[in-house]
Image (cartoon, rainbow, N blue to C red; front, side, top):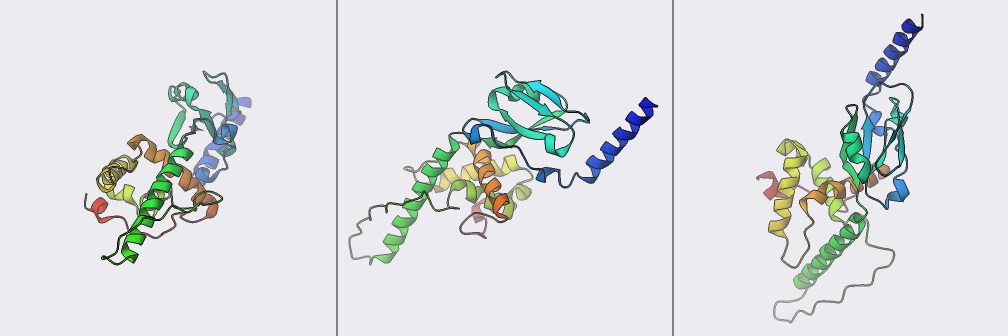
Length: 230
């Protein structure tokens, strides 16, 4: 009798997971550890365990997972990821990584892009026979304007422009974007490492999901022809 009941419950769980597969990605995640101030990535439990089980990472932190969508995903510290990579029923979602240094990098890239745009606008507005004196950057209050960072642009070309589909995979698309940035950015401007592109885009994508729209301030912007023809 007990064995038959276990099989019945397991069957219900399987049908439930199949019926909700399309919305599992929308299940709310727990808050990032320490409000995102430490390196962390989302780990997903893909097994069929009904009850929650506790797993301890190398850091000593404990994580509880179960097969239900509300407990199947949570943030895991970077030093604990190898523990879950070694387990069969777990997947590390690398594209969800939160890098504590990412915010500083995005602010730096945004500042460079804004200064470059201001210089271009000033050069076009002044007649050719006059000396161009670059204006001093305006003192902004309240941080950079939203939607002007490299992460927002990456999410726009990858999601709205479907660049990953054009190249067949996100990895190939990121490789092409890295080459594009290195070829079209002046020597005095900073180009982030290839390994950071996915995490920069992930931050902007989460903001877009909360806003219900693309956050790039010039959306919709066509994908650069150099990336399409690459």
